[in-house]
Length: 403
Image (cartoon, rainbow, N blue to C red):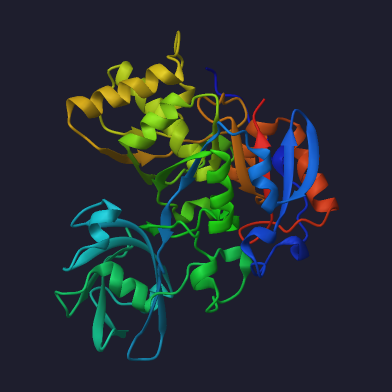
């Protein structure tokens, strides 16, 4: 398909600062819920979500777990150096593996106050862990690439344990506040499981065990995927041509059972959050890649879906190709990366409904919402503002159906 021209100013709106939810509500499922279907908007409570999903729905959520990715060190001079973990470099680029490493690791990072950190200088910090204290050290090994090596003085402790014990919750920059104790649990879904995200899949923050119990009672089937959310989710679009915006590569992990469930519930798939949308749609394009003979690596470039093609397989055919590869290679899980960029002009192949929060103006996420709603996105967001909905990560929710 031909890539459409995108005028970013058409996807801006005025978001008053007081509409941004700085803190979570006392109860996760007490948020408001805007329901959009067939052009109709209704205002409900999130606790009503089980009533809005047909009994044969497959609900897919992202089980990534946020790590306290903001590490604080002090130089001997007293200067504060802040290191924000972005992507693992060595000894592996795979997040599940590097989090379990018990030896030095290297990460691509963002560094606050980097000018005061000398090349090769080792920063040290004491980390209370269980009944002992671990010394965590950091060395800047490549300033231009912002690569930092971390090492610690215990071969019994994994990197994930060190980070959990020493790091700060990586709250979104637009909250403009320091994390508090409550954020450790509330900036995390109740079903978070696989460590590696540096931002929460916030649509899932509204779910509770009680809500899941109601969904199960109704016969709604559930499945999980893993997309480790990167800090790129907060990166504003600055490129003159929107399609030149650099989409950060994010790791995805999906097991056979989930792929089989999706394949058998096509037309009935509802995702929790934009990260789940991007994962399921990326899987479709991975199947296309396999059918086109373009390699077996699960790596979806941001504009791969927009390449000119004479025809496309159905979602079932695409997912069948993935399962055939897994059978041939005796794989129970597929792992890879995606940069997929979903903007108006894209046609959804798998997802029929989306549960999501309200997003920043002029962002990649508002472009995704506009892809679902068309011009109605302005009406939906106008209604949310007029009805005092809370916006962004700790804000209220919506259920949007794709026509």
